[in-house]
Image 1: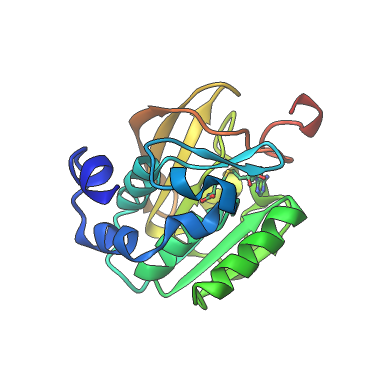
Image 2: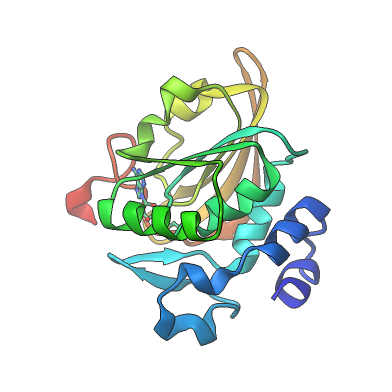
Length: 208
Ligand code: SAH
């Protein structure tokens, strides 16, 4: 998986490669899907949600430009796999999930693989996690109609936000860097397709 889907497609950050080699992806999907867990596609994790394609996890992690030791925020815990990858690299991962079944399941798996530096909060993640801000990296693993202002406010100066922005069906993965207290630079990285970010500053639940 790492060789063919990650390195060959241009993700070379050794911290990311190392993390992807260490975390057993199959444990984050149900047993019936274990044989497909290292394939080049997203997989269902229940409640109409998905664990992202391995390449997308690697690409987004690299896009955060981590050096190790940071404090990062993830929105959309899902299976917990992306949080587990981050937990190998940074010192503290804060991750928010709105669906209690998924948050509970992720907690169980993360504990079972020994990821002790991951904190999960069950709430609408479009507010970010104000009590723990600022973050050197914020990664949003659900597609948003626009960039929720809380994420910009909760970035440290120099911090990076990676977020899919667009329609419900397709988005552009963007990276926003907070270059000063009131200064942000934004770039488009990749076309992508994520499940919707549902909440106050995302999509309405009834549209889901
Ligand atoms: N990062 C996950 C994949 C997540 S799929 C993984 O590695 O498996 C997107 C997740 O975002 C879903 O679990 C969905 O319930 C969650 N989500 C959607 N809107 C949200 C919101 N406003 N706050 C928190 N989580 C949200």
